[in-house]
Every structure is written in structure tokens, then in C-alpha cells.
Length: 178
Ligand code: PRP
Ligand code: MN
Ligand code: MG
View 1 (cartoon, protein in one colour):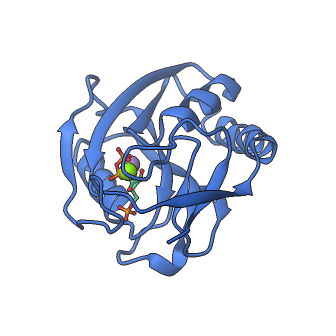
View 2 (cartoon, rainbow, N blue to C red):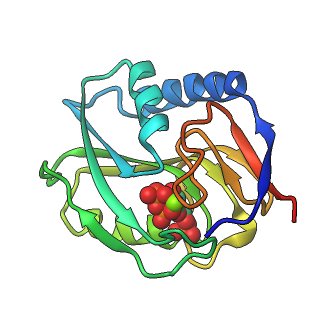
């Protein structure tokens, strides 16, 4: 299901680490009065970002995961967001931060925000490491964004191409060789 490709580095592991640090400072300031922040990672893509982010967050946190999928192994969004695994914790009356690796068409984040908002959190905020604003099909923007990127197919730091390359420590762009 994949064509031959190489990966060109786009954002280094070092600049990601610096960005995660500064984002964590902003989040800690926004939620400084929280009793406990529920940090919700969207599986699978956010697993590395959330791991790095919570270690920089000087706040009491609970970590939970929501598994959603819209791409499967395709390069195009299906625009149909399926909840494959729900949260274990209840978010009613609580402070919640949704952590996403990338916002592309926006369907995934839109769907998750609508779902969690319906559960009556006290405060719901969103963060995405990457944003491709030129691809947006829905009215959504993360409250914090690490990097805005052009319309390139990217992998690494949790992001896959047909389930590959999630383990790259940097963000790279896919370049097809045939
Ligand atoms: C990818 C990515 C985001 C979403 C962004 O997830 O991790 O969650 O797509 O695209 P959108 O803004 O167009 O909805 P994917 O569905 O590939 O699942 P994965 O995280 O398990 O790779
Ligand atoms: Mn995802
Ligand atoms: Mg994917």
C-alpha cells in the first residue's frame, strides 16, 4: 500500500524539544489554578508528543487516551471520524487538554471537541504540534500550535504513513522516488 519514498528532515528533534518546552510553559500558566488537568492524547499519532509534553508540565495531571481514526492507511482523510476507544475518566466539571499531533482537514479535532464539550468540562483547551491551515475543511483551530507547515505529507514523532515511521525522532516530509 506504500509507494517507494525517502524522508527529508523538516523539523529537527532539537527544535521540537524547544517548542514543547515553551508550549508547556504557556499551558501551565493557563491552568495554574487547576486541581488536576486531564490530558487527553488522541491515539495513535499523539503518543510521543503527549509523553514529552506532560514531562515538561509542572501541574498535577491525569493522562488518558481517546483512540480515533480517520485516515487508516490512506493518504486522504476519510472525513469520517470513528471512536475506537473512549476515555476511561469522566471529564464533567474538569479541566481538559486535548493533545493532537497534527490538524489537517480538522475533522478529527472538530469531532473530538464536540464530543468532549457535550460532557460538560469546566475548561476545554486543545494543542496540536503541527497545523496545516491550507487543508482545513472545518472551522477549528487548536488553542496552541507548535508549527504551521505547508501542505506536505509528514511523518515521524508519532505521525505515520500507513503505520510506518512513527518512531522517527524528528518530523520529516515524504518524497516519493517513483
Ligand atoms: C491523523 C493525525 C490526526 C488526524 C489529522 O490521524 O494523527 O489525528 O489524522 O487529520 P484531520 O485533521 O484531517 O482529521 P489518523 O486518522 O491517521 O490516525 P493515527 O493517529 O492513528 O495515525
Ligand atoms: Mn491521529
Ligand atoms: Mg495516521
